[in-house]
Image (cartoon, rainbow, N blue to C red; front, side, top):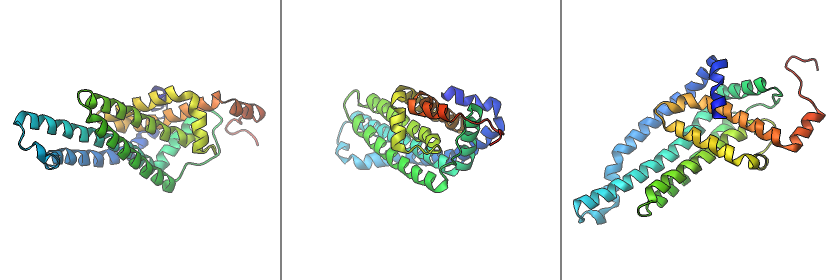
Length: 252
């Protein structure tokens, strides 16, 4: 679905370029914060591990380096979800147009409007809190000897991807009057597809400048994923058959 979302770059390049502006703004601030955090990690980890001062320098450096890496991975997990939430909030008018255009291209576009800035900002704060939770979990798992670092990174990526996908996919569903609880039920049969979409988006966000190009495509791809889930739902299919979608411009 993410690849199909990138297809909108070919058909609506001007609209997708507009969708790059919010992630560019948020990404610039996020990178500055991560760089500042990276420079401050050394002194912070040293302060937090006074018990290692008397250790052999090699073991002390290994411990503090591993802890610093874990903290940084946790910060990245927080950063990705915070980036997504803030970008969706700031760019709500742009992404509503991308979502709407995708719906129009597919046909049977809903009459509902987007979430609005206030709701988008509230959802952004929820994503930040979720990111903090994922970051803390990554840090704790990373403390497990030998496998902790790899396990923490993998679990953090999967959890962040799942949260990211859920946030993106529920937006086009809410525009149809489908609440979050009902959305979770609707998407239950698409969990693997939703997870793959979220993890792929998450990994592309980690590529330098990838988040800027990927964010508009992710909004479009999430709309496609939501529509596929609706098409699989027998109740939605029954409603569509009872009330066939009108073509744009058709007489009412």
